[in-house]
Image (cartoon, rainbow, N blue to C red; front, side, top):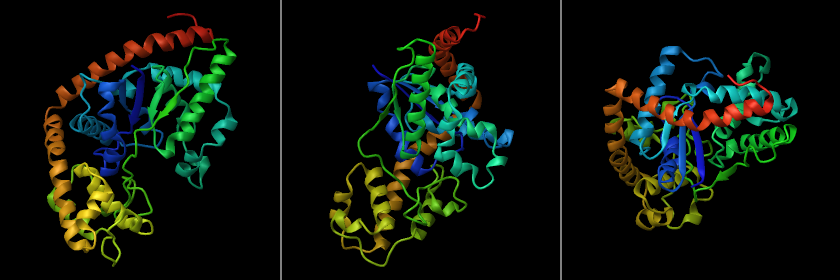
Amino acid sequence: MQRVFSGIQPSGIPTLGNYLGAIRNWVPLQDTHDAIYCVVDLHAITVWQDPKALQTQTREMAATLIACGLDPKRCILFLQSHVHAHARLAWIFNCVARLGWLNRMTQFKDKAGKDREAASAGLYVYPNLMAADILAYKATLVPVGDDQKQHLELANDIAEKFNHDYGVPDFFPRIEPLIQGVAARVMSLRDGTKKMSKSDPSDQSRINLSDDHDAIALKIRRAKTDPEPLPEHVSGLEARPEARNLVGILAAVTGTLPENVLREHGGKGFGSFKEVLVEALVAHLAPIQAETRRLLDDPAALEALLRQGAERAAAIAEPIVAEAERVVGFLPR
């Protein structure tokens, strides 16, 4: 089976956008690929984190991933900081990547903002660590969103230059983006043209996977819409981003298509539609929430699972990175 790798930052409980756009799509890969998933806590500290909050959020993210269907027996799930091969290979890649390549990374410009001089060096070389995350396992497939495709291209440039510079043409494989059909792109509840994000200052803009019935109902009822009734065909959603977003969410959580949602609700107002959406969201998220709480109630058992995952990950990454160090010219330890 081909090896697939993906990681997610420990931002605490994920949003509905994280779940429908990425996490849920990782679950079936456990049965069709050699799947490795990682909570990337090293990436998290490229911007300052409160240490206690980081620990809490890391546990929350790991618990939620398992509750969403990642089975530590069917995949490898671990914390990035627990496998030192990531950092070791990232340093080698810091010395392979060129400044010109990093200067073209648009995500650094977006995250650093106007005051680039105040950004951490870690944020600048973040893509090199991302390349190391993948190539430490010689993974060939990575599920990526549009915002990460540029980083994947850089990872391939780094791998190609390493292979060329050290005369090992086949050492690191080429990485390909893994496209899993049409991923659910969940937008802000306050602005249908913007992606749902945990960094949005308004909590009303997103559904958190931990939100209870009342919170979900309040957010959906307040979600921005337009005065027109729902269209009867998908083509009628083209210039209506908020309507398209809510229809897409209902389709995703009920396992159907937007066309089928509109066949049932087309011509109706948003009032009754939103109530249907609330109940569908609550029913879909309730089992995830219950399992997340169960896992967080026993942090020692959760951390034991993550340590076991790290041991399995290290068993793959350690010999690959040790060989890369030998290729570079380091003496064996």
